[in-house]
Image (cartoon, rainbow, N blue to C red):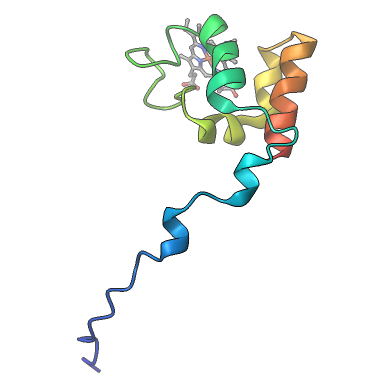
Length: 93
Ligand code: HEC
């Protein structure tokens, strides 16, 4: 029952420390920091950014929030080019 005293501390493997070779190919996936975040920064400040009232719930400086909300964002982001960019970002997740 109490046999959990093994010390298997092999948690970090070398492959976790190197970046994926795919990262350098970067076919169509928009870069979150450079292409996605600025869309929200220009429109959704200050509420969804640090210090804003919904930052705790929906921080738009985190890619996870954008992935989670997905096309719900399009009720507020109406610009076609921006929607396309966000769609590409979502598709590449
Ligand atoms: C004036 C402050 C403010 C700004 C600016 C703002 N929001 Fe929000 N947003 C809120 C608040 C407050 C909530 C939380 C409502 C709740 O608690 O359900 C929210 C919730 C949301 C939600 C989740 C609720 C839903 O409708 O599904 C989305 C998506 C959203 N905002 C998108 C945006 C986008 C995209 C922008 C920029 C284009 C934006 N918001 C700008 C205040 C703001």
